[in-house]
Image 1 (cartoon, protein in one colour):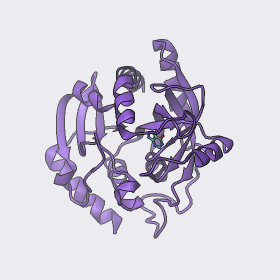
Image 2: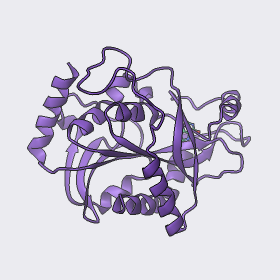
Image 3: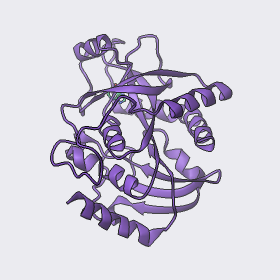
Image 4: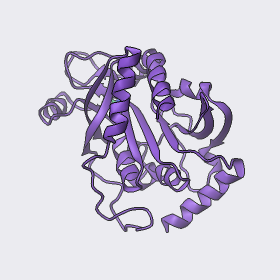
Amino acid sequence: MLIRKVSESISKIREFTDKEVDIGLILGSGLAPIADRLENKVIIPYSEIPHFKESTAPGHEGRFIFGDLDGVPLLCMQGRLHYYEGYSMQEVTYPIRVMAKLGLKKLIITNACGGLDPNGKPGDLMLITDHINFTGSNPLIGHNEDDFGPRFPDMTRAYDPDLGALALQVAEDLDIPLSQGVYIGYSGPSFETPAEIRWMQTWGAHAVGMSTVPEVIVAVHSGLKVLGMSCITNLAAGILDEPLSSEEVIVAAGEASAKFVRLISEIINRM
Ligand code: HPA
Protein backbone atom coordinates (compact mmCIF):
# COMPACT_ATOMS: atom_id res chain seq x y z
CA MET A 1 0.00 0.00 0.00
CA LEU A 2 1.26 3.41 -0.98
CA ILE A 3 -0.10 5.04 2.16
CA ARG A 4 1.99 2.74 4.38
CA LYS A 5 5.18 3.47 2.42
CA VAL A 6 4.55 7.21 2.51
CA SER A 7 3.97 7.04 6.28
CA GLU A 8 7.31 5.27 6.72
CA SER A 9 9.08 7.93 4.62
CA ILE A 10 7.44 10.69 6.65
CA SER A 11 8.36 9.09 9.99
CA LYS A 12 12.01 9.14 8.93
CA ILE A 13 11.82 12.74 7.68
CA ARG A 14 10.26 13.74 10.99
CA GLU A 15 13.33 12.38 12.80
CA PHE A 16 15.30 15.13 11.01
CA THR A 17 12.83 18.02 11.41
CA ASP A 18 9.36 18.85 12.66
CA LYS A 19 9.18 21.98 10.54
CA GLU A 20 5.76 22.73 8.99
CA VAL A 21 6.02 23.91 5.39
CA ASP A 22 3.39 25.10 2.87
CA ILE A 23 5.51 25.50 -0.24
CA GLY A 24 7.57 22.93 -2.13
CA LEU A 25 10.09 23.75 -4.83
CA ILE A 26 11.51 21.27 -7.32
CA LEU A 27 14.83 22.65 -8.47
CA GLY A 28 15.48 22.01 -12.15
CA SER A 29 18.89 22.35 -13.77
CA GLY A 30 20.38 25.76 -13.00
CA LEU A 31 18.27 26.45 -9.93
CA ALA A 32 20.46 24.57 -7.48
CA PRO A 33 21.98 27.90 -6.27
CA ILE A 34 18.68 28.83 -4.64
CA ALA A 35 19.50 26.19 -2.03
CA ASP A 36 22.60 28.19 -1.06
CA ARG A 37 20.34 31.08 -0.07
CA LEU A 38 18.29 29.03 2.37
CA GLU A 39 18.71 29.60 6.10
CA ASN A 40 18.22 27.09 8.94
CA LYS A 41 18.82 24.27 6.48
CA VAL A 42 18.02 20.65 7.24
CA ILE A 43 19.39 18.42 4.48
CA ILE A 44 18.03 14.90 4.03
CA PRO A 45 19.65 12.80 1.27
CA TYR A 46 17.13 10.59 -0.54
CA SER A 47 19.31 7.62 0.44
CA GLU A 48 18.32 8.26 4.10
CA ILE A 49 14.58 8.15 3.39
CA PRO A 50 12.88 4.75 3.06
CA HIS A 51 11.34 4.08 -0.39
CA PHE A 52 13.12 7.01 -2.10
CA LYS A 53 15.15 6.28 -5.22
CA GLU A 54 18.53 7.84 -6.00
CA SER A 55 18.77 10.67 -8.52
CA THR A 56 21.24 9.67 -11.27
CA ALA A 57 20.81 12.61 -13.68
CA PRO A 58 23.78 14.97 -14.19
CA GLY A 59 23.63 18.02 -11.90
CA HIS A 60 20.93 16.46 -9.70
CA GLU A 61 22.06 16.00 -6.07
CA GLY A 62 19.21 13.90 -4.74
CA ARG A 63 18.11 15.41 -1.46
CA PHE A 64 15.29 17.15 0.37
CA ILE A 65 16.28 20.49 1.87
CA PHE A 66 14.08 22.16 4.45
CA GLY A 67 15.02 25.81 4.89
CA ASP A 68 13.84 29.43 5.02
CA LEU A 69 14.09 31.69 2.00
CA ASP A 70 13.93 35.28 3.26
CA GLY A 71 11.93 33.95 6.20
CA VAL A 72 9.53 31.78 4.16
CA PRO A 73 9.77 28.07 5.06
CA LEU A 74 10.32 25.87 2.01
CA LEU A 75 10.90 22.25 1.16
CA CYS A 76 13.22 21.98 -1.84
CA MET A 77 13.83 18.90 -3.91
CA GLN A 78 17.41 19.35 -5.05
CA GLY A 79 17.57 16.68 -7.71
CA ARG A 80 14.48 15.08 -9.18
CA LEU A 81 13.89 11.65 -10.63
CA HIS A 82 13.21 11.14 -14.32
CA TYR A 83 11.35 8.40 -16.20
CA TYR A 84 14.41 7.95 -18.47
CA GLU A 85 16.50 6.88 -15.47
CA GLY A 86 14.54 3.63 -15.62
CA TYR A 87 12.24 4.39 -12.71
CA SER A 88 8.54 3.77 -12.99
CA MET A 89 6.23 6.76 -13.21
CA GLN A 90 5.13 5.95 -9.64
CA GLU A 91 8.75 6.01 -8.43
CA VAL A 92 9.47 9.27 -10.26
CA THR A 93 6.55 10.95 -8.52
CA TYR A 94 6.86 9.32 -5.11
CA PRO A 95 8.49 12.40 -3.51
CA ILE A 96 5.43 14.45 -4.54
CA ARG A 97 3.21 11.99 -2.66
CA VAL A 98 5.38 12.48 0.39
CA MET A 99 5.31 16.28 0.05
CA ALA A 100 1.51 16.26 -0.13
CA LYS A 101 1.17 14.06 2.95
CA LEU A 102 3.67 16.26 4.79
CA GLY A 103 0.98 18.93 4.46
CA LEU A 104 2.35 21.11 1.66
CA LYS A 105 -0.23 23.16 -0.22
CA LYS A 106 1.68 24.61 -3.17
CA LEU A 107 4.36 23.23 -5.42
CA ILE A 108 6.67 25.19 -7.69
CA ILE A 109 8.02 22.91 -10.41
CA THR A 110 10.95 24.18 -12.47
CA ASN A 111 12.83 22.65 -15.36
CA ALA A 112 15.29 23.15 -18.18
CA CYS A 113 13.76 22.52 -21.59
CA GLY A 114 14.08 22.97 -25.33
CA GLY A 115 12.27 25.89 -26.96
CA LEU A 116 9.97 25.27 -29.92
CA ASP A 117 9.69 28.92 -30.96
CA PRO A 118 12.36 29.65 -33.59
CA ASN A 119 12.51 33.25 -32.32
CA GLY A 120 13.35 32.17 -28.77
CA LYS A 121 16.86 31.96 -27.34
CA PRO A 122 18.73 30.06 -24.65
CA GLY A 123 18.10 31.60 -21.24
CA ASP A 124 14.48 32.62 -21.95
CA LEU A 125 12.07 31.93 -19.09
CA MET A 126 8.54 30.61 -19.62
CA LEU A 127 5.52 30.28 -17.35
CA ILE A 128 3.90 26.91 -18.04
CA THR A 129 0.17 27.43 -18.62
CA ASP A 130 -0.66 23.86 -19.61
CA HIS A 131 1.02 20.66 -20.74
CA ILE A 132 0.79 17.80 -23.22
CA ASN A 133 1.64 14.36 -21.89
CA PHE A 134 3.71 12.74 -24.65
CA THR A 135 5.65 10.47 -22.30
CA GLY A 136 3.59 7.44 -23.28
CA SER A 137 2.58 6.77 -19.70
CA ASN A 138 0.81 8.24 -16.69
CA PRO A 139 1.78 7.96 -13.01
CA LEU A 140 -1.85 7.32 -12.00
CA ILE A 141 -2.14 4.09 -14.01
CA GLY A 142 -2.95 1.22 -11.65
CA HIS A 143 -4.95 0.93 -8.47
CA ASN A 144 -6.17 4.29 -7.14
CA GLU A 145 -5.82 4.84 -3.41
CA ASP A 146 -8.70 7.17 -2.64
CA ASP A 147 -6.78 8.57 0.38
CA PHE A 148 -4.53 10.29 -2.13
CA GLY A 149 -6.99 11.60 -4.68
CA PRO A 150 -9.75 10.77 -7.17
CA ARG A 151 -9.59 8.06 -9.85
CA PHE A 152 -10.09 10.60 -12.65
CA PRO A 153 -8.60 13.92 -11.57
CA ASP A 154 -9.61 17.01 -13.51
CA MET A 155 -6.68 18.67 -15.31
CA THR A 156 -8.53 21.77 -16.54
CA ARG A 157 -6.56 24.07 -14.25
CA ALA A 158 -3.54 21.88 -13.58
CA TYR A 159 -1.34 25.00 -13.46
CA ASP A 160 -2.95 27.29 -10.91
CA PRO A 161 -4.14 30.50 -12.64
CA ASP A 162 -3.63 32.66 -9.51
CA LEU A 163 -0.04 31.50 -9.07
CA GLY A 164 0.54 32.05 -12.79
CA ALA A 165 -0.82 35.59 -12.55
CA LEU A 166 1.42 36.26 -9.57
CA ALA A 167 4.46 35.00 -11.50
CA LEU A 168 3.68 37.30 -14.43
CA GLN A 169 3.22 40.28 -12.11
CA VAL A 170 6.51 39.62 -10.31
CA ALA A 171 8.33 39.21 -13.64
CA GLU A 172 6.97 42.55 -14.79
CA ASP A 173 7.93 44.26 -11.53
CA LEU A 174 11.47 42.87 -11.73
CA ASP A 175 11.71 43.60 -15.45
CA ILE A 176 12.49 39.96 -16.25
CA PRO A 177 10.97 38.82 -19.57
CA LEU A 178 8.63 35.86 -18.97
CA SER A 179 6.68 34.25 -21.81
CA GLN A 180 3.75 31.86 -21.35
CA GLY A 181 3.24 28.55 -23.05
CA VAL A 182 2.51 24.86 -23.21
CA TYR A 183 5.13 22.33 -22.11
CA ILE A 184 5.22 18.97 -23.83
CA GLY A 185 6.72 16.12 -21.84
CA TYR A 186 8.84 13.53 -23.65
CA SER A 187 10.34 10.41 -22.08
CA GLY A 188 13.91 10.97 -23.31
CA PRO A 189 16.74 10.22 -22.83
CA SER A 190 17.35 10.74 -26.54
CA PHE A 191 16.55 14.26 -27.57
CA GLU A 192 13.64 14.57 -29.97
CA THR A 193 14.12 14.27 -33.72
CA PRO A 194 13.54 17.32 -35.95
CA ALA A 195 10.42 15.58 -37.32
CA GLU A 196 9.05 15.16 -33.78
CA ILE A 197 9.78 18.81 -33.05
CA ARG A 198 7.95 19.99 -36.18
CA TRP A 199 5.01 17.86 -35.15
CA MET A 200 5.07 19.20 -31.55
CA GLN A 201 5.00 22.75 -32.95
CA THR A 202 1.82 21.98 -34.87
CA TRP A 203 0.27 20.68 -31.66
CA GLY A 204 0.61 24.06 -30.00
CA ALA A 205 3.49 23.28 -27.66
CA HIS A 206 6.11 25.93 -26.86
CA ALA A 207 8.70 23.97 -24.92
CA VAL A 208 9.75 20.33 -24.63
CA GLY A 209 11.43 18.52 -21.77
CA MET A 210 11.92 15.22 -19.98
CA SER A 211 10.40 15.99 -16.57
CA THR A 212 7.54 17.94 -14.96
CA VAL A 213 4.49 16.26 -16.58
CA PRO A 214 4.33 13.21 -14.26
CA GLU A 215 5.05 15.42 -11.25
CA VAL A 216 2.26 17.82 -12.15
CA ILE A 217 -0.24 15.00 -12.67
CA VAL A 218 0.51 13.60 -9.21
CA ALA A 219 0.55 17.05 -7.62
CA VAL A 220 -2.91 17.78 -9.05
CA HIS A 221 -4.14 14.35 -7.96
CA SER A 222 -2.87 15.17 -4.46
CA GLY A 223 -4.64 18.54 -4.34
CA LEU A 224 -1.50 20.69 -4.57
CA LYS A 225 -1.60 24.03 -6.35
CA VAL A 226 1.07 24.03 -9.04
CA LEU A 227 3.24 26.77 -10.49
CA GLY A 228 5.38 25.57 -13.41
CA MET A 229 8.37 27.55 -14.64
CA SER A 230 10.71 26.62 -17.48
CA CYS A 231 14.16 27.81 -18.44
CA ILE A 232 14.68 27.35 -22.17
CA THR A 233 18.26 26.19 -22.51
CA ASN A 234 18.38 25.51 -26.26
CA LEU A 235 16.28 25.65 -29.35
CA ALA A 236 14.80 22.20 -29.92
CA ALA A 237 16.26 19.75 -32.44
CA GLY A 238 16.32 20.85 -36.05
CA ILE A 239 15.38 24.50 -35.41
CA LEU A 240 19.04 25.41 -35.77
CA ASP A 241 21.14 23.18 -37.96
CA GLU A 242 23.25 22.09 -34.97
CA PRO A 243 23.41 18.97 -32.80
CA LEU A 244 22.14 19.20 -29.18
CA SER A 245 24.08 18.19 -26.10
CA SER A 246 23.37 17.89 -22.40
CA GLU A 247 26.49 20.01 -21.77
CA GLU A 248 24.96 22.99 -23.58
CA VAL A 249 21.78 22.53 -21.52
CA ILE A 250 23.73 22.69 -18.27
CA VAL A 251 25.81 25.70 -19.39
CA ALA A 252 22.73 27.66 -20.53
CA ALA A 253 20.83 26.79 -17.35
CA GLY A 254 23.81 28.00 -15.30
CA GLU A 255 23.95 31.28 -17.23
CA ALA A 256 20.24 31.95 -16.72
CA SER A 257 20.34 30.89 -13.12
CA ALA A 258 20.81 34.35 -11.53
CA LYS A 259 17.64 35.80 -13.04
CA PHE A 260 15.71 32.56 -12.54
CA VAL A 261 16.66 32.53 -8.85
CA ARG A 262 15.72 36.21 -8.49
CA LEU A 263 12.31 35.62 -10.08
CA ILE A 264 11.46 32.48 -8.11
CA SER A 265 12.64 34.01 -4.83
CA GLU A 266 10.41 37.05 -5.24
CA ILE A 267 7.42 34.92 -6.27
CA ILE A 268 7.88 32.87 -3.09
CA ASN A 269 8.08 36.06 -1.05
CA ARG A 270 4.70 37.14 -2.36
CA MET A 271 2.93 33.77 -2.30
N1 HPA B 1 14.52 18.42 -25.38
C1 HPA B 1 14.14 17.73 -24.29
N2 HPA B 1 14.54 18.03 -23.06
C2 HPA B 1 15.37 19.07 -22.92
C3 HPA B 1 15.81 19.83 -24.01
C4 HPA B 1 15.36 19.49 -25.31
O1 HPA B 1 15.69 20.13 -26.33
N3 HPA B 1 16.61 20.81 -23.51
C5 HPA B 1 16.65 20.64 -22.17
N4 HPA B 1 15.90 19.59 -21.79
